[in-house]
Amino acid sequence: MKKRYYLTYPPELIKEPVIYQVGKLYKVVTNIRQSSISDKLGLVALELEGEAGEIDKAVKFLSNKGVKVEPIELDVVE
Image (cartoon, rainbow, N blue to C red):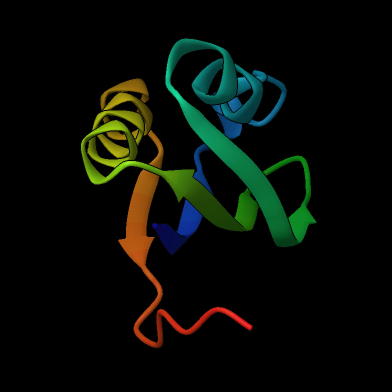
């Protein structure tokens, strides 16, 4: 299964390797589809591939870290 999310990072998390951590802690493949990073804000379009339960755990991890996670409405994967 593949799902896409918009991640919004607060300034204190911009330099933290949270996407790397997600890939190490959970059985998901991370694919950054788009990003825009500044000193004040980080925006990332992230695709997660794996079993539904692992994707859910990864999303919960990101949220608990302080990253705002929003599903991309059109979850269509080419």
